[in-house]
Length: 86
Picture 1: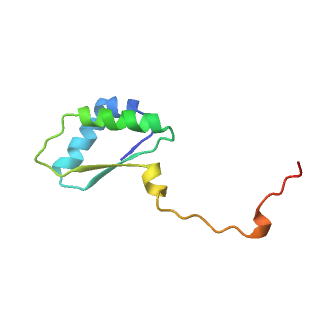
Picture 2: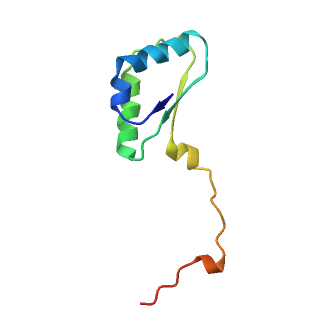
Picture 3: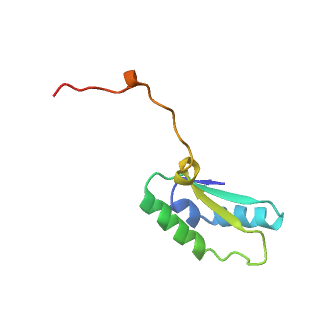
């Protein structure tokens, strides 16, 4: 499941879909696809307020920052750097 705003968590359809996945024993991962870290923090808090059953599979929350945290990027060559004349 992908969330692009905090409002998505508050929708009744979100909880309904989430509960449907949890009852079928799927591994559930929710991607918080927001670029504002404060919104991610708020979304995580909102998610903990959902009354999910404790006796089911855990729901994993990940953000774009989690996905790219281990991404090393690409090596730059000397010609790739800009040398501004000041």
